[in-house]
Image 1 (cartoon, rainbow, N blue to C red):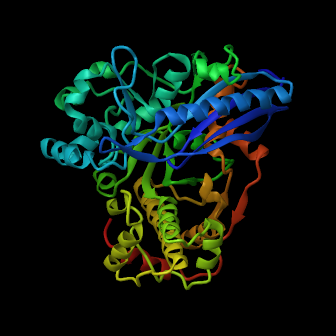
Image 2: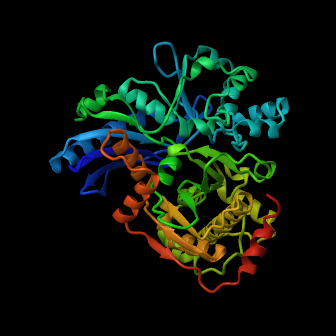
Image 3: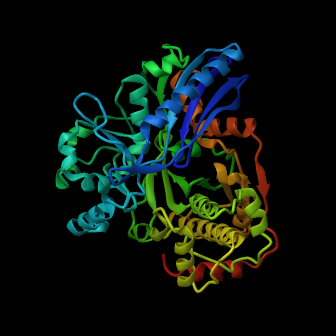
Length: 493
């Protein structure tokens, strides 16, 4: 493999922000430089909460231009770009390759009725058995059923990272890790043709699935080239579900670990060899998403810092400005576990009146109701720690894996309070970092696709551990029965 420095760009799109990072491989070690960061979020388009893909692409163009210049400053050419993003949402293309409409946001409620219709037509347990994917109202299948007659005008469906790859290179491809979240794959990592037919979703909308690491082509987008990107820069399909890329970069070198990919959402899970499709896993909300190297990510979706972002936004509308770090410090001066909510509740999914919904959830758990901003923050941080505890303990029961360390990656790794509370709640070590795990995993799969590295998954993780420092949190003396009581207040999942 090459020993010369190599630079790639990782486009990491989150539900509240996007980033472009230059990742350089130098003497076997990884170096990361953020060259662009931009806000992201939904807005109303014709009554549908939607993504502004034109805005996102303009920011990606600029970011790739910045990455090209940053690489040149190191005496390097930008070899490739890879894109990861959130799951389930998609763009529909017409027969000219143009978007029929702005891609809908998974927080739009339009799929609620479709979810009810689908699960009336097919027994939910039977549907779960086909793919092992938890039945969430925003899954792609339910969104497509909600789209109804619009599908007849579409020639192609591309999930968000596949759509960005197409807009950059002109090449259409369907990468398997993100495709696995759609509810439209079977347990053999293939499209479920019977399910397409049953729910009148045209099979022509999707094509052959590909694995992470496939070189799709070169950048042909005129606005990216105008921003300075070389036409020789290749586009590589990575593990395009951001959590799949983040899990590649978990710096685990030994032991049975669980991971928490913590950001706008929190995805809490372990890796297993094959999907675990059991009725108890279905009832408890566990999902089997596909990962790189043929692995399965057995996990549960938990609300994340979306809750705190919305609370901060609502207080700002009233002229009270807070930043998350200050608010967290103030929150930790408040007694623990006074305010608890179920951080997996569907009632917290949508936009608007987050404080009111959190207060209503506190009433359901017989908790005090928060009023001040620090009290709301304490509610959210404590509740996320309890949710992580419940999810990981459930994973251990289901898989037989005795978790002895938890790795928290993503933005949540910067929240000292949440990391420490997670260690306390579980009674195990928590290792926090790297923050940019999704971009690092994205880049590693680009290096492999380019033939620069031939690392397997374990070698990639050792490389990450050698390249980036992490922070270790040990459980402090705390009575685990208090966490048992907190978990029991949430009731049955």
